Amino acid sequence: HLELIRQVSLTAENLYKVGKAPQQDVIKALLEQTDLLNRLNMAERELETVKARLNTLLNRHPGAQLGPPAELSLVRMRLSFDDLEKLAVENNPELQGMEQNVRRSEKVIELAQRNQKYPDFMLGLQYWVAPDQRQKHMYTPMVSLTIPFSPWTKGKHDYEVEEAMAERQATKSQHEAMKNGALLAVREMFTRARAAEKSVAFYQDGLLPQAQQSFEATVAAYKTGQVNFATMLDAQRTIREARLGYYKALVEHEQSIVDIEKAVGVTLPRQVKN
Image 1 (cartoon, rainbow, N blue to C red):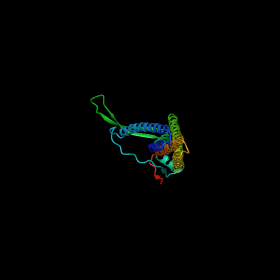
Image 2: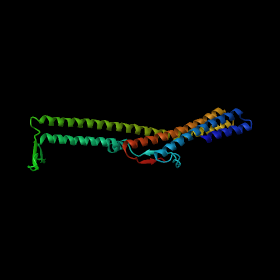
Image 3: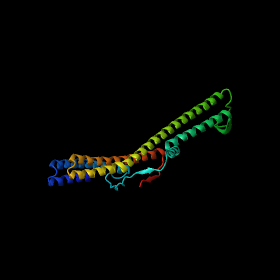
Image 4: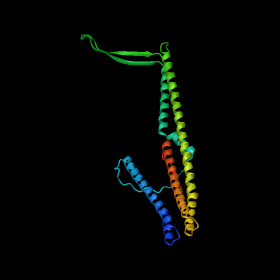
């Protein structure tokens, strides 16, 4: 962006020197350049803050040096939504935890139903301490039998089974709601990633080349006096905004991929666009 405004400024200065442009054009170019430099300085300060936070997350000194970031480019997903849906169901940690809860509730039902049908025997030994020293301490055998279908225990065991089944149904409902929510989130992020991918292609294949051509044509026209300085400045701003839009779309696409990976619980295979 700075190179563009410098080109505009240099063009205005050269024409001013030969009397083909007013001094006002040079001043406007310098003001535009100063404004852009201020924005760059603000961006650099924000970048230093981001680096410090990243070092802190990596358990490093905030001022530690970080390598230069890789050039941002479009990395396409190689998986369809159906593939992502399957991955989410199989690997999402929250869904996996809820599935374990469902399985535990099934085991509780099995145990309650077994207690409902079969008697419960218990054999043991009880150590008896004699109150009189003339008697010996001894072990006493102990046998107990619980009959679940007796009139005084049947209601209790029936209630335990009903309670376990209700708990299983509630857990299943929670699992289903969580799964639907996770799949909805994946679909939204997948749609956002595809939209960002289309935006990148729109900027890369259409708007950016057109803006560049328009800027070059406007500079040439300004040199011959066919357009005024404001038109050339607008052309410079147009290409600058197009480049910013392009990189914003790239960031949006990459963020969507990262969000999808969090939702499905795995790192996605990718394909770099040539």
